[in-house]
Image 1: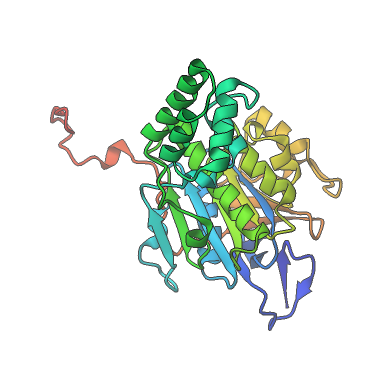
Image 2: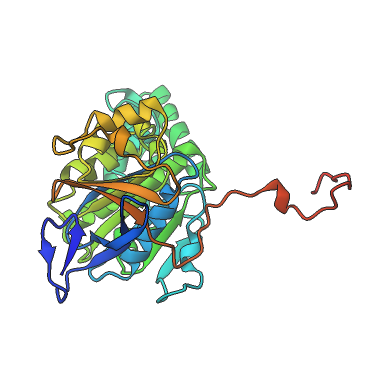
Length: 362
């Protein structure tokens, strides 16, 4: 038998419900104990936190590897740092089925009318915002949205403002009638959506669009697999238009079976909903008082000691807070089977002679 985080029960060895190997329990002397698994069968909200350099992105990669091999799930990872394409490289274990999307595009219909107004910073009650809202409701492409607005009898100033905002969105190069939809993202392989080359607004648009598409597709029964939406540097999207879609999944994703995994070095910069609604929290080392306060504010009553007293001090070490079993576990995260793309470069690795002047290209 084994104990699975997030499942709320001890399971038999022959239980075929999917679970992912996260690492091992950590004994008081720091040694590794029994294997630690994460439930991948039911929907979850997972928060992975830790200061820079202590392994939060690494842990997110471990979860992604496990999900890529699990039955009945559709793992999608939004990658704002460009560190997860390595999931598709050679693995030390079983191959990790992965597809990397370098230049993501979404359809205009991926965003609902309210999202369009939020993305373009237009009030739905304004003249221009109302035009964009109606066009987004009626049309499927940016070109058709512009034509729709042109054909109205609205005041010229409102039409020009609405069209100028749509032209700005068009310049981002992320909207296409053949862009990503939930059916393409609903396969068993892990889909890495690399948004690292985008500015903040289009990056948020892609993250929000994918979140809304996955959620709506499950509500409408368009995809069978249960989506797991993983997002690195999640605080970036709680400070932009991506927030609404993420909070929808956090508060309403359980019923349609949509999971969300958020990784951040700044838990104080994500919304209170993200902290309070997470049923599994995986914490690496934190030292910022604001970040500790954000987690302490949502500390469950079953924790007998303060979170600060339990936090690990070394990379790869975590504490896991599990609401399903109302338990707290010290653990070591297992080694990745695919290369980790998040290591920082070192000046000592630069291949030049010590006394050789550097050229501008070095």
